[in-house]
Length: 230
Image (tube, rainbow, N blue to C red; front, side, top):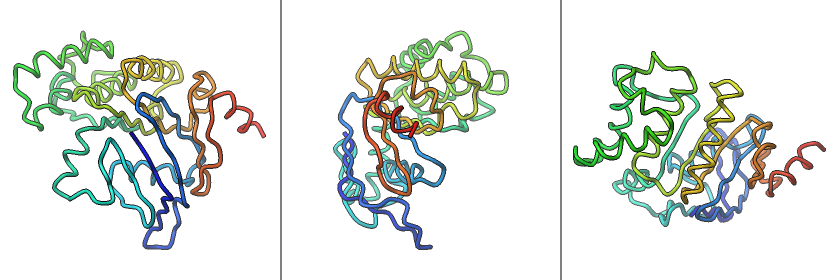
């Protein structure tokens, strides 16, 4: 599903963001990625999305060799992923329904399929009753659920959540992770980058800790808690 082999990333300004990283995430896993600001988490995400390429090493995601992938095939690769960001990135002039449907329309999915798929996904994230609302009429937590629905509507095998709880309150943060947990039960691989250590403690999942560009810990939630408290 995801494999980093001896991956190093050095930017043009000389910053070494990741250093000789070896990492494997299997299909169906739920993994938290944690670490302080500047640790290398954002670079990790950019490499996963093929927004950046490694300076050294090899990356494979969803069966795609990201070192060798042709530029014209990158959009196809990205359609195999679902991505949720901290800042929602909803289209203000579109309803909840149309924000989610847009992700299907740009891939030329038929209107019939859209009419079947969008209500199903909105129901899954608990927003069927908000289908005709606009983003400005929603709470932050509801907007993040719309963003999550949009990420899921193409039925991706891998969902990358980059600080998905960063702009919502603690109660809604817990609900969002519980929802991701439920989605994971259906077989979707989840990689969630977060600063919310309290959430990591609540869910006994694999936790990868990045610091100064290195993976300094990789274990379950209980093991991470011990490491974190040192």
